[in-house]
Image (cartoon, helix red, strand yellow):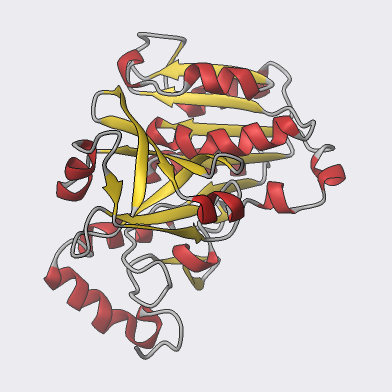
Length: 291
């Protein structure tokens, strides 16, 4: 069992938990994720690692209520525990694993939308600790839904907050801020965008026009975290990839976002899953392709 040391509601329907998981904390890197279960027979829920403390053996997760599983999670308190806390899963961020001296030469922009702020934070924090300052745009529908602003402000080179309704910070979408910064003379060698699929799609559309290489962290439906279930299948540059083992980060300019979003919807019903299995054939699953 994995004890919950801290549980708090950051804002409406968005929660933060600090979990005692020494083996995960000792091995994880920014960009990776965990899969949790509240009980032996409960739903597997993939969650990006928001923070970790190797000395204390803790991992911080942030999640939003989107269904029955996360609703049950939200009711857990400090002193309760997860039955499973599996990880780290996925491939760490390229900015973290690449040569640090090369990373220091890059002008980096992070774009976070909604709960996507949580997986952006550990990357920006890690870079700050290694002498790399990155600009960060955090977008939210309203001021009330903004999370981790103070934490992000402490590690970002420059932080730009924007709300769709103009209730706080700049007014408008994150793409508007990107355009404004470039118009003001800002230049970037790489952009990392994490948030809702539709947000990442339009960020990539803009950065392609601006000739800014862009990395996205995909969050499709995941079940087993090994690539065998086929749930997180995505097309990247006309090649079949599985977000849980090949990602979650991919070249955003190569991702087929329209297909990914349509597949997300289809996978939610048995009829849709059967349709995808028939359509995709051997490539429906990862691993051997025939399981």
